[in-house]
Length: 489
Image (cartoon, rainbow, N blue to C red; front, side, top):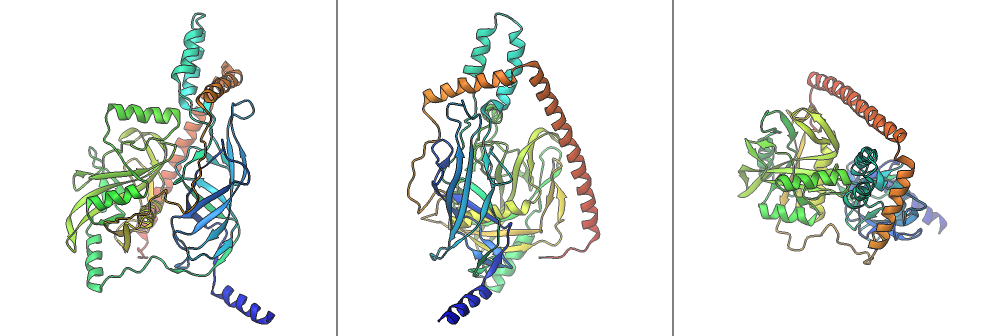
């Protein structure tokens, strides 16, 4: 009996695939979690929103449940003990859609589009409310006003009534997305192939690939006509189907820029919170601005997933065709070519292509038809504001459907949990005064303000230096890429 059990275990091990340490799990919370009401030992639950692939085999499909507990938590409360909050999550178990479960060892690597930072050990560290741009600027104004002996009342009004502090407690609602890294190998039996083989006849596949190869490769800035983002997503379907899919996936449509929205954008940046209707700068394809613009953020307006979509004149099997250019904003950038203030994008634009494809496929409103290589597309290029872009040259093709019962980004089989994000209005007012007084005692002086201004100047010089180095590296990569033969994936 023992030998038979041993034989079964060895057979399963040989049939398994090793998920190596460092593998990324892209997950979406199915229940809220936060520092104010969270406690050690509280369960945390998420769902895998992109498959984990090893050697072209899906070992953990979309929909796999990832669960664990809160390891430790520190809340700000009234601000007497802590200025910042922290949260340490231990995701230690995965459950496959069929019900099979296995232990895993992971750490949180990133909270998607979050203002909070993640330490090397996986602990989420919250923001300091009095560290926001608006509060720091108000500090310099208060110092100037304090030179006048009659300005005490105006100083109090400025720091207590006008300046809005960001919420220092950490709170992530259901639907917030995290990236986990495995810290030790996991052995899992393959669940299928990736990408899923599209069920297309060979003539359909050829016509689809011909269509994808004829899609414009780049978007351009309107005034200078500098080449910018790469088109990397192709949609087959109606506008209504695309809109329904993005909304189901938790994306929001960007609004056209006007004075009011620009002010709201500036306030979101200064007060460190999100803005889900933030405008996008216009880009052209075939001399036309985007027909649709979609974005997905959280609590930091400097970061977002986003895609611009243009309707094409061609059709496929009688259905409308749309080309999209997807990139991810990761920070603000200043004094770039063609713009004084813009976003910096992540250089690996293929990751954003995968993000769009798997987000929409997760809702069941879109199917992955094909991944079409474009051999003449440069592997290394640069957008209109100088950010480097790398790609494997492929464009993903998505077939949209009417999707009468989409799987929403906040759908969950987990029990509903009511979790307070912060204290009452009275508690928040008291905390504001405590944190302001605490900050004033430590930082409202000439020495600290001089140090802070010097640190900003040094940080700016460092960014300029790294940008120049990255630009030199980009030029070298471009020269090497043009000298080497292009290999299709």
